[in-house]
Length: 130
Image (cartoon, rainbow, N blue to C red; front, side, top):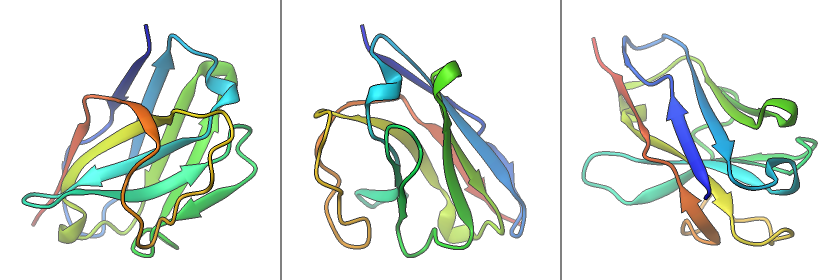
């Protein structure tokens, strides 16, 4: 069955960097668009970043541009999120998601609701605090 297992979250100080990973199994990883989303305390799911199946196209939420980089290694069925200059407002549980369709429309990562996925990992906690 489909499994998405995130790792890499931890307690860091403002300005620090972190690299999150998501190992996928149970489906043809290289065929699917993937994404990172997050849920901050008391808030709903929001987009962080989306990447095309081959990694050639990416899209970011406004808060993630210039600080976060999404990437993937299809040979290792792994999705990454490199985060730099972390801020307290980045504190959240970060999830990787698999889109349900092979060729879904690109989501509106700046305003749109998180939708169109069929599997989500258990999440990894990122806490940014001094």
